[in-house]
Length: 325
Image 1 (tube, rainbow, N blue to C red):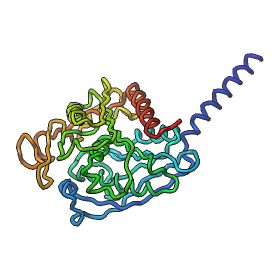
Image 2: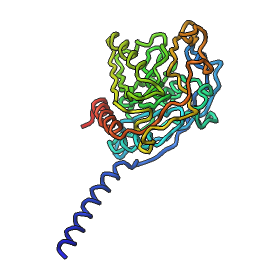
Image 3: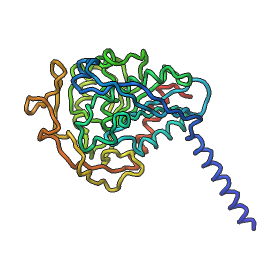
């Protein structure tokens, strides 16, 4: 009888501890916010052409963490497949840390659900404009500390989170008056070299990537980070062995599987020239998704060890950036 009672007590204590931990992941309040952005070509973005762009209403989900007053916020930008389960896992992690989250939906308001199989459906730089517009809305929210907002992006959204750090793009598109305390891209595409790419001021860039990623290979990101470091910028790249694209997805396939119809620019090198033109360096003509360097069939797969390591690293970055106790 004593054994049964003791076992029951251990179970109750264990359940209570788990429940307390899980409860921290719950938002104190959830709000859906509509905000205005633009749908435009990459060239329009690069030249600051607002007049030729199409206005669009987008939405995002704000989850206000438990706590009082103005709280730190993480803005999250999804990839080519839309908002996935990996983003939900990150939101729970951040909320449990006492950080509010704002997840941008860059697709629904544009009539899209995915661009994985046809990347030409939406210019890649649209997400940067969306991020700045979301920043403007969130920086004014009464429960958000405008001096403590960070940006995290994944794949296409990781590319946006990376290049959203450029001084030039802030001058052209960020009208919020606010800045991010950290830019944290996951497995971004770094195949394009933009004019002024090393001019990011004192902004903190922390990239997380997989060594086995054949969707957005890490090599071009290593080269870009080196260029940033050569320019004395605060940029770091963390690479995980045996980690494929979207390695942080808790319900991703193991082993990694081929995404047969997904487009990747893994064999491309693109550079910006005058007038906002993006040139395929191999052909010296305008880049297009019909170019032979664009390939299909990259792999996607989960890696729990890499995901756990990245979670710890990002948590440490944000604790330091937000000056959390």
